Length: 448
Image (tube, rainbow, N blue to C red; front, side):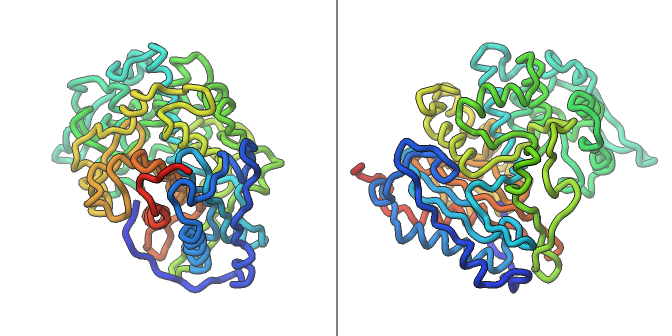
């Protein structure tokens, strides 16, 4: 969710001709066949009130974006009323090695992991294994003694106080627990140093990371404010403790396998490394540079830290099936994953209306937060095309998806680019909504 502008930098390292060849409006297999290209049954756009011409315009828009270094490439899927109406792979998965983007490309989806983890928690809630307002310390006792930031003394030392009320599971789902994140989310407050020093990727186990989190001072008393945080990582560990199985196993057996998401998990096999999108960032001139280190290629073996908030790798097709399940009220291909009323609770506003704008500024106006996703609460105020009730939660490397209950549209647009030294943010979140909505020609189509 970002500002509405970006420098159109000149393309480097790849010819225009190669990029033109890398735009694939992919033919879709026969109805009932599932593949990377056809994660849902196929329909013509006009049969569900969308426009073939305007969907092609969407693909052309993102082709131009890749030429202008907004990202190296995009994987794009659009569905309406459970039918796939558009699929395209645009630009390059790996520019330096001239590997085109494809619908089979794997992406590190980072915070798009959060809705998945939230669904896992809500599945346990429906099974009666936890309640949303249960204290987290009932299951993770390390949070019993968590302290809360109170101020600083005359010497600049941090002062804390005891919890006035316990952190609940609902607080974690809504990011109202008082937990924080790393240096990207706080560079100025007295707690910035403490939270920046927490490194969950130092080789310690998930359980040890959660114990370290519980020892850090909260930014505020639980339930009194909103702050984006490691809360969903705590929830992933909670799922493991409550279910009695490793979190990754719970997701695989309860969600990924039955949903038909074979390319989603916390690492990729060595054989699939060649299918992983390279992570890029824009340098000060607007050109794309490869990113090495933790934000580069994902692990090829199970990581020590299983991050429920940011750890998943997936494909556009896999995530489309997950999103379509939510759009269907928790049901997909004959199996009920969540009750419709639980999905309704998940995607409803759970925090003060001003929380998003207060946290991130004007580009977040009109947006709320539910249980792991952000619903539109005032479509007139948001910077992009939306309707009230639309919901999503994107990833930091420009991975995006949307569900629009009132129109029946579900879309996924994945890239792999980090905001860089040019200081200009990714805006695919807004572009996706604008381009998908311009392709809707009937808000309430007559099914043909």
